[in-house]
Length: 139
Image (cartoon, rainbow, N blue to C red; front, top):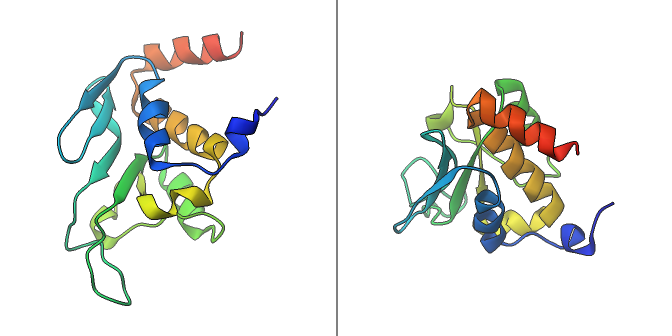
């Protein structure tokens, strides 16, 4: 059953809360926080970089969030789906991750964002942790 909280528009602060809800997460703080499991980042905030900019104004994006995905196919499915806010840049060619602007995260519901964060964690977590989490999720 989907709760009304899952149906509301996602917020940037939900990224942190959802990432921290996953097991064995380590937070790297600073200007641009990141979340890792088993020594591998699965979600992180990025500062302005020359590869991510508004094509109309040329201004650097200041609110990029990266989410790891399981496969290149998953990445392409998210990026090509115009109903989602996900994108990529040439810098990310060959990396299994998608980007979203913090200002656009409300195009996702909180439930959709939870699924993206969980999938990112599953893509990066050690196999034993994944197996344990999936077993608990099915209880």
